[in-house]
Image (cartoon, rainbow over all chains, first blue to last red; front, side, top):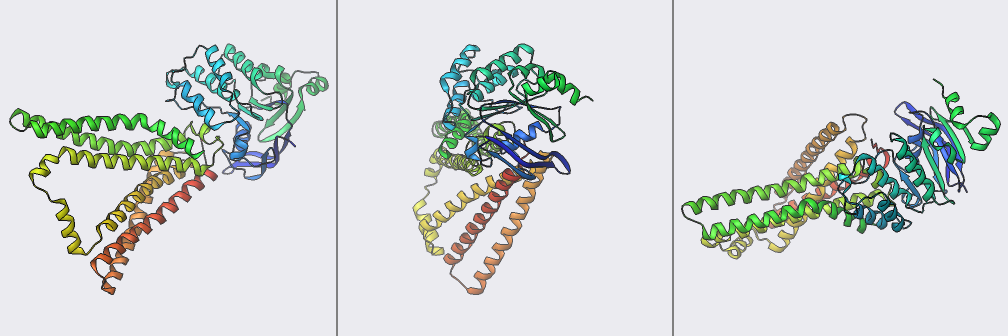
Length: 231
Length: 258
């Protein structure tokens, strides 16, 4: 059974379509890049998977179920924005995740936090924007989830931080899980992707493995992306 | 999961409310001491100053419990923190109930602390006036033929439901207001005012209807007061249910996080 499945999924904001009749199935154990230009529907698709939006048509299933409390226990979600409460300190954040997620690996989170040199009593408010993003990523990747949905994890950060983020993602995800990374910075993630989905104007224009793309087109995913989405 | 949500909600709100309770306690003790030991000349001025500070502290606590109720709902559910809260493995009902229970507890605690603090700081004045509370209660019962315990219970329930209603009115206005694409804050304020006006109009209309029924049926004063309180409780329960459904539907169907 696919861990992530869209059947004729559509979403409109008023009269503006964000996703149009999307059919998609992702199997467990893959790292998938959801690639598309800004406004192509990547965030909308991820929000729908988390139940933060309701579909205008069709359906989206996580492990065969519609998004809800049960599927949220299976999904580890990194939003585009920093959503961790500013007033909490690191210990309180870890307590919070331990309380709500049975798959949260506290020891792993503490190890990564210590590696970054962040004090356990330091509040989120006192951290820089970059550190907050790293802490949020650590919390998300410290879960042994079945599906990771990462929305623009490397957007708007310097190259060194990008390397740290990608290293943290790859070093901590469960190989049996599915990892969906939405981004338009293809070159940075291309080497870690098993599958690639190109999305444009709310429609899936390509779904293939990275090997297929390289063999059939004799091009890197980044080069193909630049050709497909040429302005 | 509701228990865990309530625990974290108390942890988040106690940071603001506990210091306010401590300030109120300190100012109350100062006002009590000033009233009992500083009564003449410069001492009288100090007593007046502490009394003024006492009223400020009471006001601050009541206002803060109200502001905190709105602020927690907006910041925790409708702003960036919403990405965390709405992706927890809990239902929207649990999120709503946790906010509602904690806000109501703080309202009741703030109200009770204010009453107790007022009684403590004015104890000397009440003693001096030789107030006979028991006698006053008895004469009230004799005049209106009321069961004081039942009357107090009805009033307490009305106050409790009133707090719940107040929270839900603002929750409904904010959650509906934030489903608009633009001017979310303005929409929330306008909707809160609109809900308040409609609730007041319906409340006054139903109260007038109850009075008319009472007048026609020539009921005793006690029954009339119980009937009025009963109808008020019923109206509050209906408002609470309507506002709850509006809030839940807005968050379930029309959530619009930034």
